[in-house]
Length: 207
Image 1: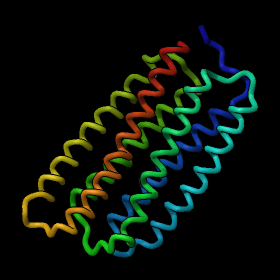
Image 2 (image 1 turned 30 degrees about the vertical axis):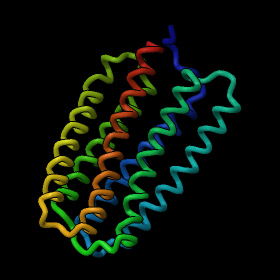
Image 3 (image 1 turned 60 degrees about the horizontal axis):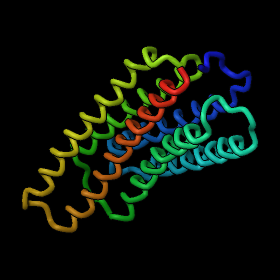
């Protein structure tokens, strides 16, 4: 049983730093949706956040390789770090596609999904911050439930968006573009749930 936190808190600093970058990327994506078609600044800001998140990921993995005693299992640390970094990577890849695809209009469904993504990253980050102080599932349960709820909301919005996309009125090329954009934001929201599942497994193993 693991009840006492190790004195070395650097891993927790890195986890929380990555989570903050995920929130920031999601917020910049939401602003991209609101400010469209003036999006270059938000794309650049997301790119900067992605570079900084990559730096933290490399630091975390290097420390994992060099540290003898870790807060919890190495494979769980690896999965947690990569899980949060993947959310950031998804958002960055999505933002880059707006100029590549020459997107000329914005959809209400996309804007709605960015709202869901911001909420999901905030809830995920809250759970990550709680990991520093507790190994009790009961103390993470409410925020993990919220992450799962938001993933379900994201699914519903995505299904509605795809239904409109395939109504036969949208040109085939636009269908292809928006299907990929919707997939990226859906995967980013799913990534928040994946991180929540990793956190749940960590507290159950170490509580």
